[in-house]
Amino acid sequence: MALLKVLLFPDPRLRTVAEPITQFDDSLKRITNDMLETMYEGSGIGLAATQVNVHKRIIVLDISEDKDNPLILINPKLKKIVDSKKVSYSEGCLSVPGFYEELSRPSSVEIAAFNLEGEEMNIITDDLLSVVIQHEMDHLDGKMMVDFISNIKREMIRKKLNKAKGI
Ligand code: QAP
Ligand code: CO
Image 1 (cartoon, protein in one colour):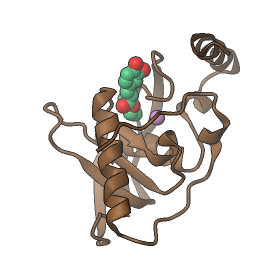
Image 2: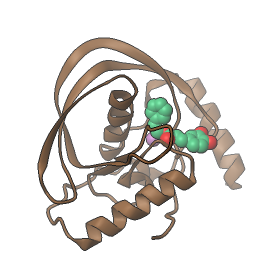
Image 3: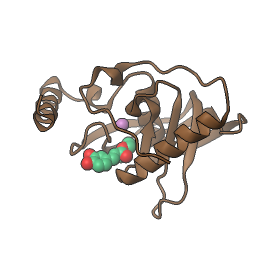
Image 4: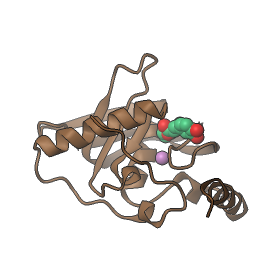
């Protein structure tokens, strides 16, 4: 297991569109283990491979209280919006540390994805799990939560993070 470096906004590599996984092998298991370790270490509830500079369609998450219920989704795809009624959460992101933004997303979605064994699964989610999956799937297409806020807020966040990085 190894901790991975998390790219920080506005790193342009966060805008990369990730490629599908074609081989369900040991290297996939290794990267997902490292992603989970990195997510837990950073007190995160979700992490996309894009954020650790691996441009493959992998997300990991764990919204359980005790951090003992990891979920790994490979090549996740939105099948349908089950309930378009919006839910609002104060969203955070390990790539935007220290900033939280209230965003609205469809409350329930159906997702198709593969597990580490290459078996397809269908998940109907709602509430926080649905929101975290939507947030992480955005990363795989190079999208971030800061894209949904005002330009002025995004600029403020960019300046503060660049300053913290000494850029
Ligand atoms: C996405 O984000 C999410 O600023 C996952 O200093 C989160 O795990 C979607 C984190 C909430 C919906 C609601 C953020 C850790 C973790 C920070 C995360 C920080 C330390 C964010
Ligand atoms: Co994020």
